[in-house]
Length: 356
View 1 (cartoon, rainbow, N blue to C red):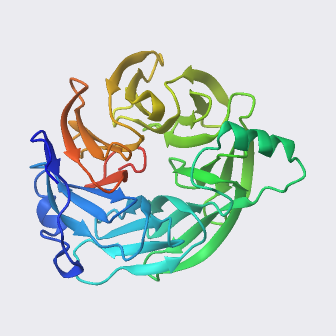
View 2: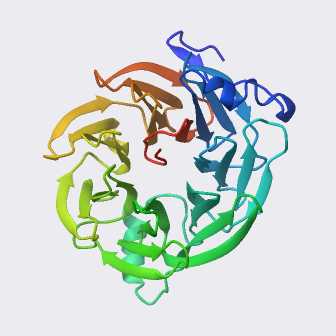
């Protein structure tokens, strides 16, 4: 296939033995690396100095979506939709990936210390309900909704050490600034739940149904005083204080998902899927600063470690868009053939699926 010269090809045909061209500690000596999960492929390694591909990680399973990286950059964990498991992948490429069974539809991954926290959704059909499906759900009040789960995996042991039963369709996951609480968005339940990190005990449940439908993305502010939650089917973002009380509703573009503050906590970035835009808001006034045109089904993004650029994964338009954070303009479009889903970096940086 011949591609336009404005694109850089993100993919190479590499086997596992040749899946890493340069170790992360070498690349991190400059601007670092980005890891991009591809729902129809592997994990791409992008050199942030050159914005060129340095190889791939073979995760050993199908459908990698959510991903996380350990603080030392040695391990990538991916949630593999098609195989109902996660992969613990050596970023140096010296050992094969270790697969750990989780449950149906694993989606979101966050890492805290040597543990991975993975949401999975046994009842999920893999996308927002259509209007017909929604009407059928509303008519069938007697049908019990299947709860979602959060699996806690010991990365060193490579096994699930705790499974927390949550609300229907667990999705996004965030931690309090002190690392003692885990906050989960529950799509079809229209709720946000707060759990004790150590025990998994449910501490609080916040219904957001009166504000809108399908809470999905969640992100804490750098100072730990505020949480943002996107409501996918209501084109809205909620602002919660550190007591998990809703303090403000913000209108967004169509079907918002990924959300993050910048490192300074001055701006908020929202990936508005069906708006085909990355929206930028002032973090104090919540007024919109700009809509940055994007591609299709852009769900997740990450800043580069130096905060000078932002990488946005657009699955349905098969590209990763590079955005200059000073000018808030797209500077490159990197071709991605296998439906990019999420992005993390090493050194770790702010983004919709990770933070330093």
